[in-house]
Length: 423
Image (tube, rainbow, N blue to C red; front, side, top):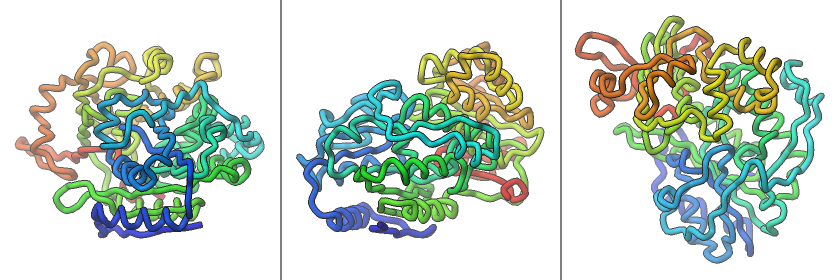
């Protein structure tokens, strides 16, 4: 059921247009007495999910009983983040997703299916797990909100990823991340139909039909002044809703270049990116655009850790970011990695496969720590003086010394490639 599909690469939704379209769609659903909202967390602040959640709350008021940010493996939101993202929505409605607890298993995707979609690379079953609040909460409407944008694990973010990963469990998250990494990130990003998505769709079609889930999906772009705007709004309960949003996202968020880039400089907003677990979007989203022998410079003033989860942080520090064959060998030889496949996948995702140089400029991690995980280090103050985010514009820049760079102010909002690499 597709309730709404509006937008184009040139469309700019006003706040009133979003509200009118949203409320018109909700009214088509009829009355609801107990509503659960599943927005993203603060790492997806720019998705406009916070504004939409506030609109939904103001529409249903006391019928909204629970709001569960789809944290996945991320840390829980602070009160300050909740207030900034969700405005006037009462804080006592917010619940914390615990990805190692509070789970309900809806079913199991068989290993034969995983083997088929992975081209025989993997042969394990996949548990379709969600936070038990979705199953046991007695809600008659579950509203899953989020932004569709190119994504390193699943190809295009959101839709049922928000359910099975965002509110999912440790095993499912680990195995889905590893599936994407082993299949190949560059074969995944920017594509709506991927092995990971096929697994999630199998779970939706076979195990989640009784859950009253409606998806509210945005596509976010930038206007001519660099301001973030809503280009698309899609509301429905099935794959068609996501597929239409993904098609628009490719037009809005995917920048296809004529030739590979020699030097890319990425800025990581310190309020959003405090770990390489998140900050490595600078690598994921640019890797298809960077030339062999090129360099990625990451300006990361908020960086203070590698993994948000303590165990994942430990594993990153122990093994470092290395090539796919090296990490696969470590997985075979070390039970701690074999039992934490999302960490192993992350180590693969964060490697350039020795194809280009990665230089991190961190605010709160030492040179020794950065180099210990196989990245190059540069002093943040010096590099921000050379590449001043306040003076650079997104895209091509010529520096005073004649150096040509490509600047990206927020890697989470797009995907970059050159034509020969994306086929």
